[in-house]
Image 1 (cartoon, rainbow over the protein chains, first blue to last red):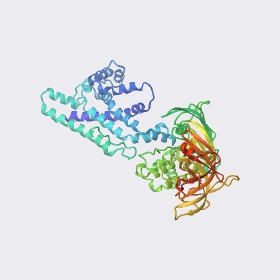
Image 2 (image 1 turned 45 degrees about the vertical axis):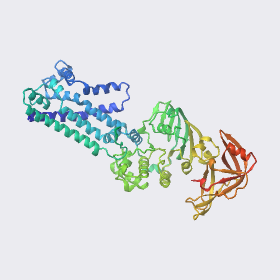
Image 3 (image 1 turned 90 degrees about the vertical axis):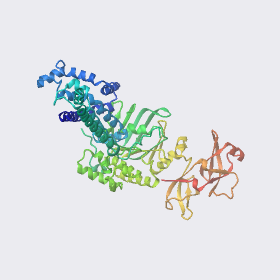
Image 4 (image 1 turned 60 degrees about the horizontal axis):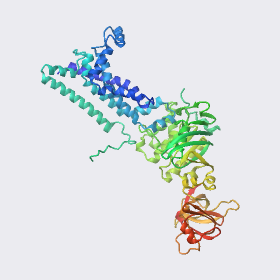
Length: 234
Length: 387
């Protein structure tokens, strides 16, 4: 059991999902309320990491972080080393990779807040920003928690982007999934199994907490509750 | 700059010029197609009823005044200040308008308690002041004991009170009420109206009250505006509008072709009925007694009686052995054919009734102007409305 890789992965996921709350909320706000006619292009761009092979995403991130790109040069002049094959580079790659898993639940929950409440808030003297803070955000708690947990769990299990951007440096960029891959390559099936099982359990627990909170905990105010979906097989 | 939500309470003692002036055009759509809202009116302090069928443009009009929808052109001003003026390119944002707006579905904030809902609009005040004001308002509306409950935990009538309190506590310059009482039973409704009246005696702001319930028009109105397909088709005091010009829209909306002023003459509690004298004291208009269902009223109190023309019977001879308690002799003034309905106007001692008949009934009874008839009115066909 490689605990170094495990804690590195947890640290990466925690940092990424926390940053995604800060980055995702403004993007989701814009996606929900903007009436720009080309908005769908941005929506598609945000959703890209869901369908793109991680190696493709990782490749472009690597190019963007490298010493030939403006970003890479700026970082190098600031810190003296490149972003590629560092923990910081991993964070940037993972942010992009997990962005839709945060933004989409955020935007869905913002959009689900009844427009009547927003109108009432305006009539009571609150600006759109104040309304967002006092009405939309509190009523979107479930979506925020879901987005946080999904991006956490998603980052936990990433492989392709990490390999492309971070390589495989123990203690710096070697995450659990890469560790598992390494073990399998060298025939250590039992060690690979332990780590894989741990990842499986952690991911399952995180998702269970999210779905459980959505079902029984958050945003149950009785009003405006949607009736349960009844399938056609009933 | 933050909105000046609440000038201190002393404004209530000063005479303020609170008049709402609206002159707007706006294209809007309803399920039956596209309409053009084109209205011009002033609403003074007190209740102004906006009356009209659904789809007449009432909600679009209120949304324009509240700033939630932009008119195509025109001007909206309250207390002399322009909120919207298409010529001056002025359009004050909804949240800076200080117009109270209570929608039929109330839109209470589900995650806030009753007290937090009421205090919501007092953003610019200190926490202590917010609490004082909102508790005062909760007290006025008799819902102080519910202050820690969420909207889902209180009844429909209580929610209505919270919604009204939440709008009033901000001391708006005008109040827009979009069928706020539609879902309530009658006693709850009248006590809520009482609270609203009491509040407005001190504040004297224009209250635009949307309804398509004819009874509410009489219960509330100083002034009625009847809206049909985006246009004002009648405007004035309720009894003038709802009665004198027998507009088809008005009759259809209120459901009563016959509406009379009446005075209670006697109560028969044991029989569940009472006797009302119809007719105003105007010279020339007649007087007539009618047995009606009993309501809580004192002898001598004034009310209105509404009777649907289709609920009335005509007889050419004095009927005997009828269960109906009111048999009124009269003369046919005129007959009008409306599609397959005959509307007969019958003069019963100076009071005119409109009676709807079939073509066959007219022919069988050989009805015509000047013919002597009896109008039969069942006690329970008389609908009583407060003044």
